[in-house]
Image 1 (tube, rainbow, N blue to C red):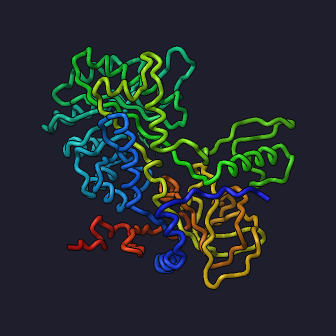
Image 2: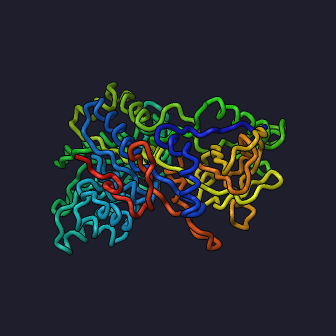
Image 3: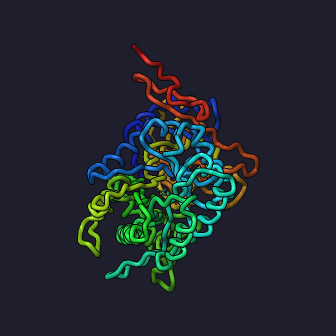
Length: 478
Ligand SMILES: *Cc1c(COP(=O)(O)O)cnc(C)c1O
């Protein structure tokens, strides 16, 4: 049998996923697929990151990377915390402002239209610029429209560390650290329009050495900025702190071992059509590399930030966290996925069970496990009376598009017992990217509604995402 990859589920998410009647009632009301978000957990995750910053005596802001989830409830809950938000489009900026997050706590990043730059400058949010031309365009807009001076951070890229062979991967974003002169020139020329706040990076990797080199590169650039008469105040280490998706490291090891065996033909396939997830068999030799998210991660989220800040600077032989503090810089971060850990689930209804195939009323864009390479099992929530326990079954999970490729996952999944039509398959811990990042309306299939749920006394309360505000259903007492 294919190994289980049981999701790591805890706290309130565990509690609501154990409330089977509540889940069935939600789905009966709002249809399948259905996204569930837990705004209070996001607030708790913010506090965990802030605690890590404080352990290094560092000031700074945790900016939630909005692009990881579209929910209004989550952004409105964020407004009640000390966190900020990283917005990457005009729509996200409007959403954040409308949720009650003040401009002082908003950072605009990503590729920007003129309209996005104008609204950012007009409202006074910080602009995280990707390039020198972007800064020049922003300065032009500020000057032409008589707008106040804009606080800017410059994203840098192309870090190489001295003494080791660590080189960071190519990026479309950021000013290369090997050629910073045009950055100083544009900042100098537009001192009236641009207030240089500091340097930033964002690396989509889990390698600590790569990130440590980037942080050190930013600190060097800021020292250079000071020599040139600027007054940088913060360094921004971006996102990519990661989530541990699996409950048990041994299941992950067992699964990757079995996959290797299957690719080499030493055991029957454990994936659709013998898919190798990046591994292939060349004349009996294993080639390629496993191209999936490391679903089991021993160090993720705030613990990963701690690991980074504890890493010694190669040039100064001091922990990077202490180096940031020595300079009295704030340390900003932009976690997306990690702040959404345990913040939601996608609920789907089983439509049909036949010949080792389970079809759900959802598709691979609604639960984007494959697109993001996250491999983990759904949770079976049976409907109706308890049934005899027939033991585990191996199945493939198919979606509702008439496309051969529409598999929720290409893994053969082990379910604890045979599902039936009407049961739910719940994809837990999917709030970060896996829930609504890719969702569309192919074949005019329904797109998921989103519900926000919160505890009230011993019960769960829930409402449509767009109707949720931090005071909804929480009557003040006394
Ligand atoms: C996507 C993104 C993030 C968030 O990345 P996670 O891996 O979700 O933490 C942060 N900053 C920038 C600039 C991004 O593009």
